[in-house]
Length: 549
Image (cartoon, rainbow, N blue to C red; front, side):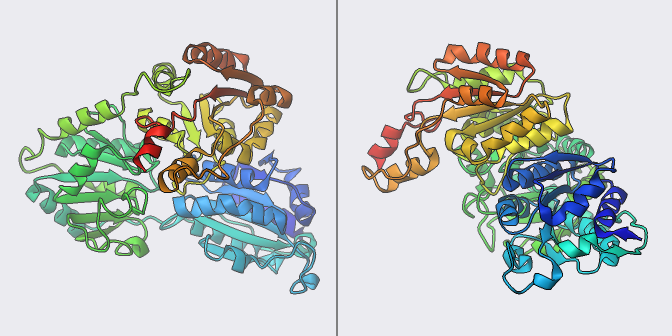
């Protein structure tokens, strides 16, 4: 006989869980007590949204479900930001929520929420466990649901009395991974499409990739001389300095790349959904009927034909697909072989940062410095905002599992993601980028980095405004600025107040020595860049946007 709390921890251990992210609550004290005697590492966070985002980063970088525990009501609703990210980004996460006791349900008890209704549209599965004896069944099923098909978040509600009750339950067994593989007929059909194509293009996206699959994709690209692009914030899926790489497919796309995709006669989309952002509002591939022949490879049959009608649908995970197709070679030298290097040259030109701009701090030279200094396995994280353009456009990703950024466009992600990434890979450099508005949405997780001695470096790009919103405001309602100005703290002093290292950069030349001091400190660090708000994009100033309105 074991308590429900002990059975939860047993089931997590059986499914290979090595760490959880949580904010403690009295509603799941029985689980916390069971964790006391467990080998599972418990990372206590400062806000449930940050904890859920850490779990998302864990799932994003490892492919294994990130595990998050929060308390009922406010704890659960705070965590919903991370669950929305995991859903839109197809990341495996399991959120456990302490729930009110069974006798109090349906009475609007203290902090009571109906989680099936609240999370129903932003989770793959929501369940409440009423019988402790069924914990092994439900937890193992949660791992299967979170990782199969299109991965995503699962939410499990845990009534307080269920967790303290004693039950006799079967020993928990690990879930059985589910793989979807392409058939020979689909592979033959794709080979025929490629042999007939004149202007093919490959777009990589989604999840369920690993380092081996990325390497096999590189082999396929080389064998067929294929130009390859990575969809929005999936840039770690192909080496940016490889001669077949053509650039990132998303918002702010290189116009030459956009033209190449629109003029392609065959698009091979592997793993991604090609949603609103990577499709440039459904203009690169028209929905529901693309101008190009479309071969769509996806692990979830429900995504094939959902937004686009594919010419050929292949229900397979990216890793299984590239494994099956890697041995196939073209019948002759591809017609387009000479064009692929031109697209790569266009990418290199597009991704070379400018060395000038308004104000005393130039982001171009800063990005150039970081590109030369950071090792290939450095992990870069960020949330949302115009500052992220500098990272996405000018950072040349080289290796898998080096990027954690929400395709959902959620602010506040970079700092908690960096904490999780550094905890997972302590030997690697982890750099979080954040705007001033973005940082203060989950910046309290810097305290978590200090607590666990995780020397992340957070680069805060401070321009004193909600930059993306101000840019749109100036374009759509020129001269009518409201609700976008910010008065910020001294971020370097804030870092020191938390027990970390802080630096302030007010001139371009200040950045390199400031960054090196932060790196050498061995502490979690904030390097604040005080950027002129005129430097709103790499190519346009705020004044230019206003004048064109």
